[in-house]
Amino acid sequence: MKDLLNPVWLQSFVAVCENGSFTRAAAALDLTQAAVSQQVQRLEAECGPLLIRRTRELELTPAGAKVLAHAREVAAAHARLRAALADNDPHARNISIASPGSIGLILYPRLLALQTAHPGISVSYRAAPTADIIAAVLTSRAELGIVTHPTDDGRLTAQPFAKESLCLVMPATVTDDSWETLVALGCIDHPDSMDMRCRLLSRVHPGRSLDLLPVRGFTNQIGAILDPVALGLGFTVLPRFAVEAYPDQPATRVVDAARRVVSRPVSWPRTSTRQ
Image (cartoon, rainbow, N blue to C red; front, side):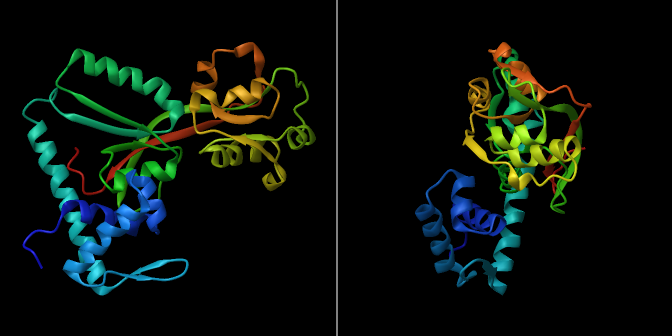
């Protein structure tokens, strides 16, 4: 084995272990699956077999468990070094944050204002669904993540950050809010749609099976989710931040239901040196 293991190989190996597959790891790292596979193969050439590849799952070998622990220690040490260097000048550092796109509508302009006031700051912001945000924090691609609900992953710490109402949004031309109307209309899906529908509709329409709701479309562009709703093609559930930012307000209608809120805790690695 060489004296130093390539940190890029280690990062890819951690991503594969934490995402449970090469495909999801590649998506989390913004790489091709072939690139991730090649990096893990090179790591195995140095350390020996690290993974037992089964049809539907991956299993760590004893050597793989040791390499995974080492890779996490390397990532934590790197984060501590960056934090220590940044302490010399709080306005000369990189800021990497991941959050749902809805809160990004509020957060990102403020990050840019901070960068404008302090040019030494470099801002990296990623809009993503909850699972991808957690993976980004665990693989050190984001130092801080804002998610739609608390995570029970023991490797992370979290605390309440903000609350925002969830809204059931219908086409303005549809005035009936019954369950039968929702089933007939269908849902416009987005990356966090299932979680948000479960949280809101299970209270608005208790006892109903959400599996009966057909999906009429999908987009991961936060600013475009309400476009098909405005055209009468379906309903959706979105945070109020996203609803209020939509430019064509008269074309949509927010169902006047009881107040529903979603906590958005902030998460970072448990090994973080934050106070």
